[in-house]
Image (cartoon, rainbow, N blue to C red; front, side):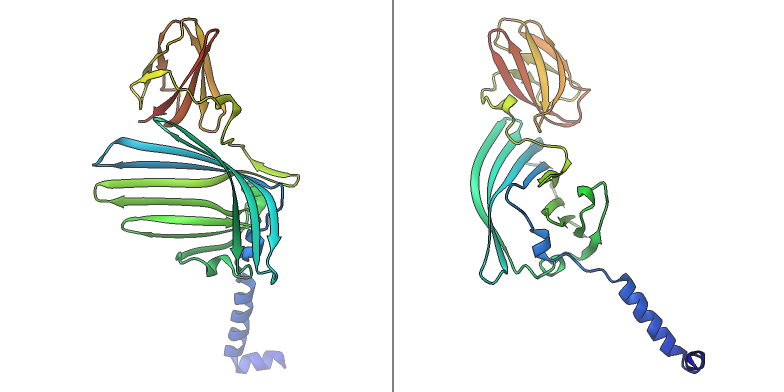
Length: 285
């Protein structure tokens, strides 16, 4: 009977099959209450890198930022449609001419929690409910991107991690800008992922930068000059406060091989028995 029905009306079977296929492959986007599901004690580390160049900019300007966010308070509205968070933020901006550190507490809120990520932005490219065990411990992500003749941009949300990634390229006549901001570490309860990028490392808490570097930015080598009279030890940190190289520093001047370093911003510390001197080094190729 069924075979006879489909034999006489094949379009009925086609419609039925199409409907099954449609629902089988349909994927929903995350609701905002799932994206912004933080708890007191959660910790998030963000790392941002920006490069600007153009006819009115001497050399390429590089800026690195680190931001550590700690959730310290949480409440909901009466209708359970808005969530309020109190968070403590440690923020460090690193440029070639110095470091700016800021510590502050702020109140933020997210509303219309039953909306989904694709309902709150106007990006054209959409990627719903994607999971990768190597990224965020397999937490579900939604990504959006768009592009044009003047560049492109994109964002990514993740389950319980908020807006966790932003990138963009602007390329206008005589000006070029690239930026990328990513969640590189999080702690939620006993769950952790990624590598810490401490915004205000204790090893670099002193603000005096008295170590002279030339040229800066450097490509393959740079000359260092310090005020201290005693022999010292030179330590190089990346912008996340991680030690990446250590060597002796004898006398007042020294030639540093920067070819071993990737392009980026570093903090140098020359410590002897008499004093510790620091400087910002930019490696650019």
